[in-house]
Image 1: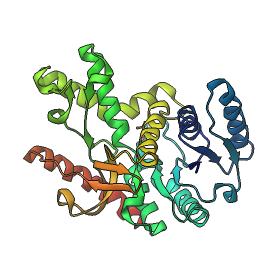
Image 2 (image 1 turned 60 degrees about the vertical axis):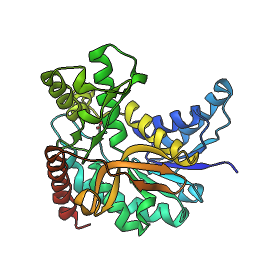
Image 3 (image 1 turned 120 degrees about the vertical axis):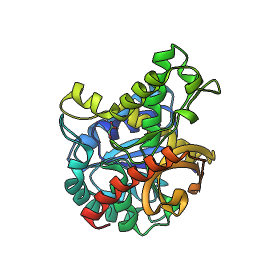
Image 4 (image 1 turned 45 degrees about the vertical axis):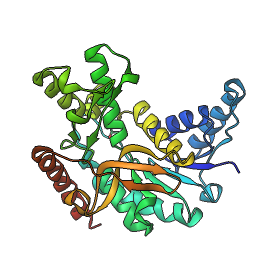
Length: 308
Ligand code: LAC
């Protein structure tokens, strides 16, 4: 049976996600948007690339949720992106309204899907989707940690002039200014980066990671990043569709893990066919734990505003 993935939102993040997924032949892809013509045009264009790419992913664009029926995974990217000077939190009310509209339609068409939320402010939107859908917690996942960790990995590779393949990193917490990059758990060929660079350099890379999204927004001016966010979603989709049991940092609904209850926060998760199959609890130092709690506090403030 061919797998089916729907992407809600055919803007830069949605369309680029479709591109990565089709080029890896992970699934048939449905791009859906309220804007007429854009998903159809991008979907057809992308499918016309498949004979050249030698990939049998069928790609369509649509405005009709009927076409999304029985998707295995639905990725929600719908919402307005940031402009320079805006924080992700400034998007809260507008994107919550969009989430309220979209989630109901998605789950009516695909009652058994796994939801991957990409819209910002990420953790609050994941929590909104969780509450609106009524899905069990393993089936609602927020994409942020893979992206934030990839940015940290890229900066580490640039700094040390080593292959990106050698670099692993973990960034936990909310997808915002309070995110928690963990240098102790970030390695080059297994060696913690704290052994390879001085504290000032580590601190500089940590700060650049926290500001990673804003740095791109400042360059682009009219929107936010999309290549790395889309690649991050694709890695999560692949882990689920292939039941890889891959450990990736994702926003998950915590029920006591890390001392946090009833809130979406970025933590290491095991992704497989059932979605989040496990939340991995790693030992944190007192400073790391308090940074995670501080970040969870920032998410809590946002979810309180929209009451989810
Ligand atoms: C970023 C936005 C998409 O981090 O949240 O680039």
